Length: 480
Image (cartoon, one colour):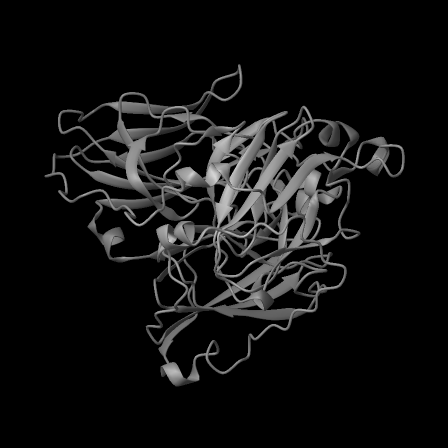
């Protein structure tokens, strides 16, 4: 549900981006740069303008009101579940704006806890990123805050708290931000599916035990009730011949999804909000916490009366996520090329470059390995947030980052404010022809990524299994 208070037009000269309201001064204390590797100019040239650093301001301002408060919703039929919500909805508002519009969110915190909003995947001014201890003070109960920014990219994004996220997201605080471009209007339907799981008690209440030792020792909190858009077994009605843009968003604390649409023609056209270089089949694509995947789905013209079931095959227990029900008269399938980004660099040669920064994903041994609630403290380079080093990325140059997972657990690593491209896994060149903001690093796996940072400031960098991040697997990266 989109909630818009008002939409106005302002002259570009009054855009907050241009009058310095969001200028961020960065003071780096004790920063660490692990190597002095010089990025190849050829690699930077290959990047070209794969994505823009320019805000093409339309002059339109979309103003939205969001209030966080305690509420009750019906997730399981016949039962009321106590939740924390944005505007009384689980999931929260689906905000849609056009590329070039400025979004102004008037946020009020009526929770019994302090909170913030982080705009996951959106390249926002650093002061709008919503991370306490990095670029924003927590918003106290009863207080308000105005988030205002002009997204640089069209795509599928989402928002959630960055204060005790393992609890606040699990209680229901998440929503989506869809930044539309012209191609969005060409589809028969443009639909968002939010994938989530909830750990419920026998009375269908959210289990109040958060960040437990078991969660920390494993892959975070996995729920026993899986929902799509806050419901069990979501249903989408379509007509024969329709062409659907389906945006999948994983808001779970720790669960990874491996969705299958059976015989439906399902092509991935975007990952983490950014168009791919060439559309490809969904088969065996893991959607980790924080990831988004946009699908281009063509409904067969001869399928009237059929129901296509959508399953998750990641675990041994195959869960039905949703149904696509074909009904009504046949329409002519919209005919246009897959939307792609042909400017994505290949960067094959980059796998032989020196690594600029290496991140060892491990547990903190400074206190004998024991941490929160008798569990473990997850760490990056044996440091836990906020007692961590800052790492410097070189602005507008190719930087090579390496993740070495020294554990037997999953770690979806998420970098705020930037996109990167996976170039190798365990020394083997990757065939990923797309950018990401979150990469799933498997147990004992080494992943290298290449990145051209275009957004200056101090940015959070963490595991998006929220329990791992909360126990310390987070640090900060400075682009300067």
